[in-house]
Length: 437
Image 1 (tube, rainbow, N blue to C red):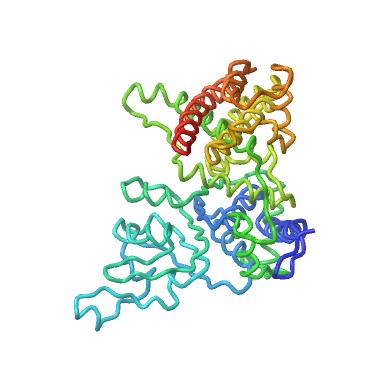
Image 2 (cartoon, rainbow, N blue to C red):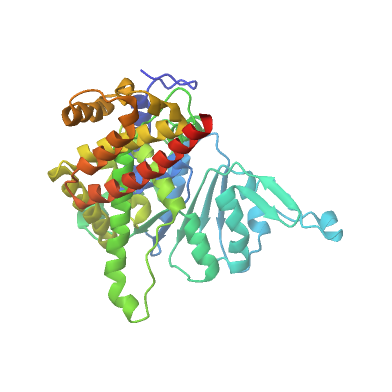
C-alpha cells in the first residue's frame, strides 16, 4: 500500500475521491461524463482545456462546477471582449512606473496570482491581449516589458461559441492541450433530466458535499509527472514503444484523409509536435490514476484521443481508435509485443555496454539479471551451445540481430533501428577499449 504525506493512503483512494467528484459533477451537468473525465485529466496534468459549443449549452456551469470541487484555490473569472487590454488579466498598470516608462502590473487578484482561471468567450478578446496571454498559459510567467513574475496558475478552462483563425489564435489553441465540443442534446429524456436539475438548482453551481484540497490535487499532479517520492505510476518500455507507433499511425491516417484536400491546395498537413507527444505520457499516467492503478495498460493508450482529437467530434475520435486498434491487432496477432520487448531489452544491454565498455571483456551471460535478458541468453546457448570466449562477444551480438526474424512491419522497423544502434555501440566500445589498453 502506497502512503502519501497528505492523508491519502493509496492510489485506489485517490481514484475513489476523483470518481466521487466526477460523479457529483455528472449529476449536476447531465450527459457530459466524457468531457468531465477529460477535464479531470487536464487538472491532473496541469494543462488547459477549451470548451466550444453554441450559446446556452452550459459551458460556464460545467467549468465553474468543476472548479468548485477543489478547496483552497484562488479562482479568476472573466468574460472576454474586444475592448479589453492585457491589464484585465494581469492587473492594472502601476501609474508611477508607467510615468517612468516601465510597464508594471499590480498582479494582486489577477489571473497571474490565481490557481484556476475561467475565461468565457475567449475569442472575443483582441489579438493583442491574446498574444500577451501566451507566455502566462505556457510558461506560467507574466512577461511584460521589464516585468517577469512567476505564476502558480494550474489550469485554465476557456469557453467559446466559435473559433477565430489568426496567427495569434493558432498559437493560443496550441496552449490548450485538451479540447472539447459540446453539442446540444435533444433527446427528450436527457432534456427531462436537465429540467429536473434546473428546478433544483436554478442553473447555479451546486455546493458539493465534499471537496478536494488544492494541495491534494497538486500532489496528484506530482504523481502524474513522476515527481512524487511515495507514489509512482509505471509505464513499461514495450508500452512506450506501442504508444509512439499508435500516435504515428494516427498522424498517418489524418494526413491520408486530408490528402485530397491538400492536393487541391486547400489543406494543411496534420502534425503532432514532439511536445504534445511527450505530454501524452502524463495523460497515460493520469488515466491510470483515475482507474486506481499504479501502472499503465494498453487500453489507456486508446483514450489518448483526449489530446489528439476533439472530444465531441465522433469522426476524430473514431480515427484515433482505428489507429489504436490497427496497431494493437497487428502486434497481438503476430506475437509482436514479445519481440518488441526482447529487442528493447537488447538495446538496454547495448546501452550498458556503451556506458561500461569493459563488459565486452567478460562473457555476456554474466549479466543475465532480468527475465527478458535471460531470453537473450537462452538464445546464446541454443545458437552457440555454450558460453562464448570473451573475444567472441561482438560476433554473438551481431549474430543475434542477424537471426532475429520480425513477425510484422512494426517489429521489422524496430529491428532496423536496433541494428544501427548495435553498430554504433560496437564502434564506441572498441574505441574506448583501445584507448584504455
